[in-house]
Amino acid sequence: MIDMSYDQFWGRFEVKVDNITAISRLFMFDFAFTRDFDLWVGVNEKHHLRINKTRPTFFAGFRPHTYMIYIDGVLVNRFEA
Image (cartoon, rainbow, N blue to C red; front, side, top):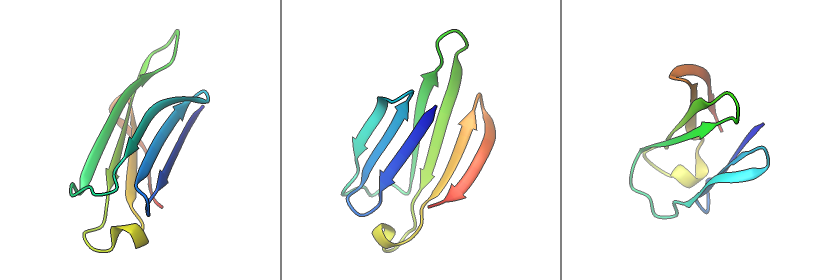
């Protein structure tokens, strides 16, 4: 199970795989519009997971960000939150 959380106001980004933190970053003063997070998941069957996060240009802490989730290079989900 993969759980992703992002606090837009404070900039805390976290990804957990099977309840174990795989990525934990703080982007409070981040000037990049797009961030890619890559990790490998699975024990017997490995998969490459890439999360692409794009923030809005203005008032990013108060507007939805766009997330694109790729598994093994294939886009499986795109959402705004």
